Amino acid sequence: MLKMPAKTLYIACLLLATGVAVAGLAKRKAAPEQPLPAYCQAGGNWLALGDKQPVPTSITDVVASAASRDVVLLGEQHDQEDHHRWQLQMLAALYAQRPNMVIGFEMFPRRVQPALDQWVAGNLTAQEFLKQAEWDKVWNFPPQLYMPLFEFARINKIPMRALNVDRALTRMVAEKGWDQVPESAREGVGRPAPALPGYLDFLRSIYQMHQASTPATAAMMPAASDAAFKAFVDSQLTWDRAMAQALSEALIQSDPQRRPLVVGIMGSGHIRQGHGVPHQLAHLGVTKIASLLPVAAGAECQALEPGLASAVYVIPERPQPPDEPPRLGIALTETAQGLTINAVTAGSLAEQTGLRAGDRILEIAGRPSTGSSDAIASIRRQPPGTWLPLRIARGESQLDLVVRFPPRP
Image (cartoon, rainbow, N blue to C red; front, side):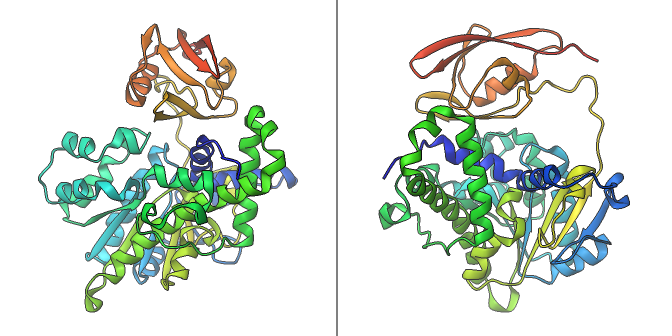
């Protein structure tokens, strides 16, 4: 079987994390212009979905319904600060109804569970917790986005559960397929339920988007695209199954007379349309599930599809201040080969500069790149209207590129 480049899996993560927007984008391109519904204009309101068109509802009804379930899934786009603030609001509202709670996080692999336990017990400082949980290695987003959620669990003594598996497992599945991975390497994850047809269509669109963005990969894959795509699907199903299994175990291993409300914090793409984690939960016998997602006011809200989630919260648009730290528009992973770019956002400064998925950053402003945290800090310190030189490795070549940050409006 053809081995899939490991970075494919990480790019899929980023696109799946924004699954609502990806699906909506395709729909908006195909559909004629429609007047923006009133509930999509300003935001700050709830919409019930189910299998019908959006219907305005209240947070009281949403919370009451969700609190009556066994598992509540709260989606996010990983880099959106308002999504995490919304998650914190929902945790507080649900906790008021069901204080016997467990919170599971996609951000952590199972092997760092002891750090989560020590944090909730109050035995670690925030810095010690992030270090022992290997945050810079396992998750490539600023920790300050998530710390309020972790603090909420700590001060309320709510158990935290690591939902994910080590990247080595998902990478191995992506390269070989599920059947070729030894049982001893599966971290206790059972065979995933087969993907629903709609999920296969969605994953194929993600896969094709990645191929189109990496011509070298696309050129080498056509002869074995079916096998490579199957391995890619297997890796995503392994990811979904691992999280579903951890949520299910948190529910089943508790006192049957006092089952907790189990809340899962994860990328929206693992939740949308009930295809990912909800489907795997149902296969494990957990069917009382509520899926709640944040969506942006405007076009993303307008593109909502029936069945996307139990309910969605429309996030109001927030004007960006003129001193907003600059964003390059890349996602990074620390690999054995160095700091690697996994994805480049369309229309971003990175794309304008000529950066590509697969590039490795060797130097930033003449200094060796030492890790994703330092790289992000260097970019965000860059004043508007200045230039930032980068040295990258692309294949066997080294290139010098210059990022030109726009002046302050």
